[in-house]
Structure formats: C-alpha cells, structure tokens
Image 1 (cartoon, rainbow, N blue to C red):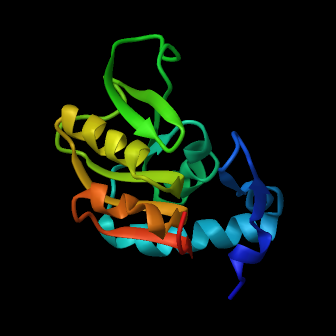
Image 2: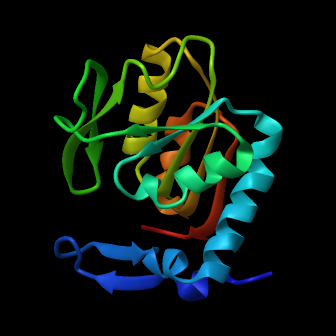
Length: 174
C-alpha cells in the first residue's frame, strides 16, 4: 500500500502565520497516487450507496468528480457565495483562520437522495458541517463523509454528528 503521507507537502505559515498547510496537490499531479486515493475513497463509499457526492469548493473538486464517476453517481459542488447562477441554499461556517459560506444550487440534489460529503481535509469541521447542513436543507440524507487528510487535534469529526467517516491520512495535533 502506498504511504500517501510521504507525498503531502507541509508548508509553514500558509495562508497566514502559525498555520501549517498540508498541500495535497502532489496526490493529484501523479496519476498513480491519484488512482490510489480514488480507489481507497471508493472502497469506503460504495457500501454507503450514495446518489450524489457533495464536494466543497475548491479542493473538494480535486477528487470528488472522479469519485462520483467511479461510483456511478452525480457530483454537486458546494460553492463559495456568488458563484452559482441560480437559487441556492446557503450555510455560513467558521474556518481555522476566518469565516466563509457555502452554497448549493437548488437543482443539485433532490429530496430523499443519499449524499456523501467529500473534501480534501477535515480540520475544525466547519466546512464539512456546513455541507451536511446544506444537504439537510435540501431534504436529502447525508450518509457519510470522506476526506483525504484529517487534523485529529482539531476535533472536526465531532461536528459530523456520527456519520460514517473516512480520512486516508491522519495527523495528530493541528
């Protein structure tokens, strides 16, 4: 099995002082690593039988569409405010270093759909929790969440309300 952690670059003081940024782009750039990430995500997600993957902007778009393709389901982007051309549900949330919001187009998912939440990194859980809230606003059912990496010390998993959750790489602390 490939050790994905060895390929994740750590960048100190980005995007601001005191933050240790984990750059997952090397996993996207290498086709062998990309395939391995998607394979592991599919292995977790397939038994959950999602109808659609909700991927958070922007890095939830790195693996989310490929994951949806492999599962034979749809992909619905949870976008930053003002990027959708039609009506949308909106959910604000806090980040480690600021505030933001996500929007999900009203046509993106239908009531009763089974939805898998996906993003690149689980930290404080703000983005993931906002995604779950958007799914519930749409009267759909969140069935699980998957991430490439997780910062365990920030306890973001607790904000997922007991959903089955996978992180391929876990870091202790923040």
